Length: 269
Image (cartoon, rainbow, N blue to C red):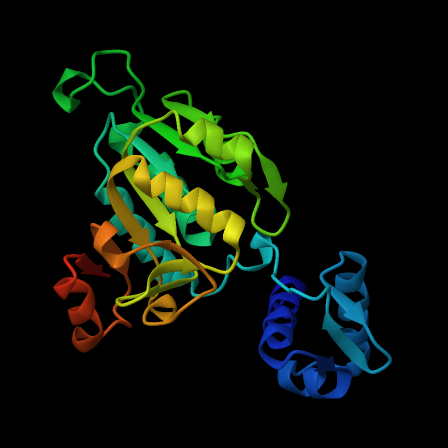
C-alpha cells in the first residue's frame, strides 16, 4: 500500500468512526504504529485532522474531506458513470457542471472525446468555428482542467470559494448564473431520494446547483448508487425536475422503479 493509499484509508476510517486510535489503525492497515503516527502527523500538518494523544479526530465541527482526497472512492463506478454522461452530451451544447468528484470525471471524459477535439462543424449544429462545447461551471478545478482545451469555451462564475469542494458560491455566483441559459446541467449530489429529491450537505452549494438546474433545458444527475434512496440536509430540486439519472449497477430494479415512476430516465452502467 502506498502512502497516498494509506492516507486515503486513514481519512475514510476517520469519517466512518469519528476518531482514530494508532494501534487499531496500524492493525487495520497492516503497518507499524510508528508509520501511522507519522501519517497522522503529516495529515495534521495539512489540517485534514487534529492529532490527539493516542490518535486523531476530525478537523473542525463540520468535517468534510477536501475533494482531492475523495476522488478515489468508488473510482471504477465514477469512471463508468462519467463515460455514460459524456455520451449524452451533443457537440455544440452549452452545458453546466457543478463541482464534485463525479462531475470532475465527466469533465475529464469530455476533454478526451475525439469528436470534441476540434470546434463543432455544421453537421453538429453550430456554425463553423463555434466552440465544441461551452462549459459553465462554478468549480475552480473543473475550469482549470478544461481551460487549456482551446475547443471549449469556459464560463466560470464569480463567488466565494469553498476549500473543501473548490466550488464558488454566494450572490456573486448566483448573479452570473441567473443571466445564462444552458442546454444541459450535469449535477453532482450527496443524496437523491425519489420522494425528497436531490440534495447536498451544504445550503450554499444547494442554492447554486438549484439555479443551475433552473437555467437548463435538461437536467442530468450523475451519482453512484450509494447516494440513492438517501436524504441530505439541503434540497437542490424535486425528482420531477430531473430528466436523467446516470448511476451504477448497484441500483437494483426495485430501487430504480420509484425514480422511473417519477418520470426520470435511469441509466445504469
